[in-house]
Image (tube, rainbow, N blue to C red; front, side, top):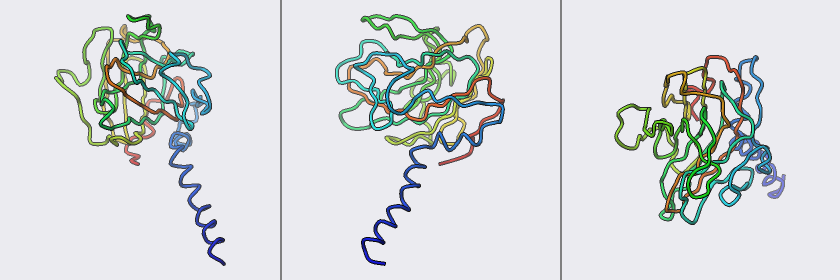
Length: 237
């Protein structure tokens, strides 16, 4: 076998590994309970099925990019058109870390309500913000405080965060209990008052900020009325 043939053979061996790395969410679907039917919220091509400010949200190489160069006066979101109450959500998220970019967290908004906000922002939110990247936990935009971990005065850092790289997230919300796994490790298991939770769209957050920030999202597969188990817990990377 000549050098060129060996090169292309080696290249073909690499392709499946690259595809698997880019489709972690898809690889987890075989682990779902048989009662759960996965729905892909993102088609990998455009923002069909989503709504938000076009100037902040685009599709780049099969990912959803949320980014700003100028100041964001109030937190804004890209919302799924359907609403969800009891669900399992699988996704990957990556935060750009550089001297130029802010390290402000992002979040999944869920179990609340879409609302207009100051500064002409029609894509605001009141409810639970399930935070990730540089700060992890739950901020409650109803009560305007951090509710998980309780009493935590500053940013919550976790050892499982892949800083500046892809983080693999599973969120399970059943009744008034919310569990959050990152890269195979449980980040929080939180139970709230039932009246504080309601069906709502799922939102991707771009936080209020005076500095540039950039996040990428991919995967974004959801199931409704999930079984009471975590399919990625201790799965590692």
